[in-house]
Amino acid sequence: MEFTNVPRSDLETSLHKVTYKAIYTPSFMVYTNPKQNKKVSMYREFFGLKEKPFNVTSDPDFLFLSRVHKEALSHLTYGIKERKGFLEITGEIGAGKTTLCRALLNQLDANTKTAFILNSTLPEMQLLEAIVEDFGITVERKNKVSILKQFNNFLLEEATRGNNVVLIIDEAQNIKPGMLEEIRMLSNLETDKTKLLQIVLVGQPELKNRLASPSLKQLRQRIGVRFHITPLSRQEVPEYINHRLRVAGSNGMIHFTDDAIGSIFKYSGGIPRLINVVCDKALLSAYVMETSEISFGIVERSIREIEGVMGNEHNTGSAEKSGELESANVGS
Image 1 (cartoon, rainbow, N blue to C red):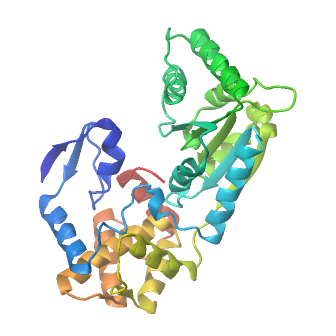
Image 2 (image 1 turned 180 degrees about the vertical axis):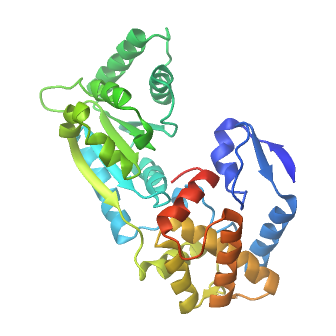
Image 3 (image 1 turned 45 degrees about the horizontal axis):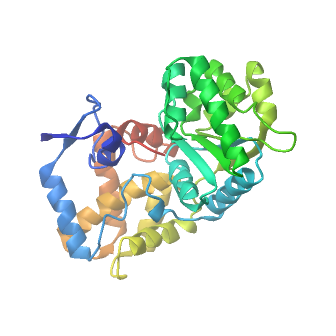
């Protein structure tokens, strides 16, 4: 085991290299396993892949548009283009919310100015600073009145140019009610006909409970679009797996048997991140066995190895397993 220095901004990308439950270290340090990384590189060569197909990072190039994800993307696009003000997107841990948001950012036109906040646990002033800085606004004085004044001027300037402004906040279930009310106040600037700022709150199902608080009644009433991302169906799981393999450069030689896919679905509950973890481990095992057929036995053995690391019992609910993964991986 060795330490590798990783810039803070690259921490999310780096954490996927750790295949066991992470013990959090300072944000500039990450554990890596040189032998494991070498095996992964060799399995890419063995299967003829240009990159790992089952990373747990939120790469929009790998987004699989299931029926539900397609609907969610349509709801987001509609809410932003029609300037609905507040949008709420929820889903279980690992359901693909962050990946969907990154894909959305890639689709928006040049007349849409965006900010994407991943760390929703920042204190109030730091969160405000992060928002304006992500919009490219240089803060002259770091006090609340000055920041809000500059932000309001920015919104007015963008409106005169005919531009739309979108703020996306991930993991919004972590935001305290008082800060949510501050965010609502950001949206108060509007013309007679349109909202100058669209705010997308993205989070786990707990976000719904938070927004149901009586103190957030005004915010709740302003939400114009709501959508909940459900897990993949049994029929969508092989489509999801094959999609990621194709994007990674597979020529079709890798084959997951039907009972192997059934085992993956039973374990993951259709949660994309859990599917990725199992498939990645299964490919590594298949490489060691020098086979391109991923059988039921390989998948079951991979699941047992994952469970042994994570300390869960096989066949526990996917929500419990998702909770373990949340502590080991960044992004949803």
